[in-house]
Length: 411
Image 1 (tube, rainbow, N blue to C red):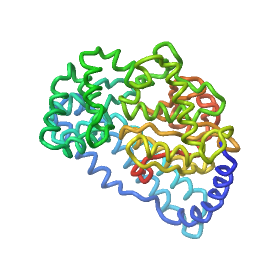
Image 2 (tube, rainbow, N blue to C red):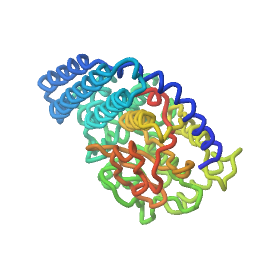
Image 3 (cartoon, rainbow, N blue to C red):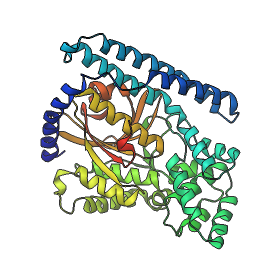
């Protein structure tokens, strides 16, 4: 995508060499016994919590933790079996790689806990358990973990807690008048994205009140996340129409995933025209100091998201020749997606070339919005690790990610 990014990527690869040589001298980090203890805790929780879907999800988490503990213990044993004088031997490198891949598998196998994380966040935010369970399950299907992520409930709770008594009563009234659990979930999401005084939320609530679920899904988000497929809204394709707006298009979709009020400004009239105007405006905003013919810089992506989706973002290079660098980026991406973010990914070959957007994952694959084709595609996590993204995303390697604070330190 940019020559500067390519140069930085090459320098980072060189800098990693010394670190890797030192790293393999130590055993792969982790505590197999601790993972087994956590697995037992999840098993016990599955028996103790009778809410919808929770027992099965926690049982799957326990199985994933046991599998991870076994793989980590095997990797540590393999590392210990090599003599110290051969610290750079192939066996120690393989042990570290096996441990990293075991961590990747654990992250992906626990994807089904995303909805349960919403439930837990809802309860901690003061909702009754039954109501939190209903919100966690609202519109949940396939890759789509539902209307709300944990971050939305945290933000909504903070917004409501900051209101005075009369403003809080008005907000509670809006929620109480919702016609269905799904409509209520969309209102909670709008509150999460609103300014502290909840400006615009009452008007939004009136617009969506009593609307059927298909209407809400068509107008309050720009993509369907339950399964791969072409993405359209009101008869127009949701895709990049210009040669250099893959990043721009991804940003617009990411903001719409964050704020249903923003999505509604695009879908409440002539969507094709509103979407065209939004692309022009966003491209201008992200490229004030960067030539538009070159697309959008990773820094421009991060700055724009920081302004519009409620969290500071940073971009990070990924060494596509280092499986552990790709593994770490994938884990952090999935952590952010589980929390409710859409995550821009920069893919390429010899140099970074194209932005796509991670929007969900399920059963060992990541759901990615590919703006050139205007469709979501299911990409196996193994394709990220092996550099096999070309068939799905047009270029083989993951080379940078744009992550919210917190997720960039996960994994």
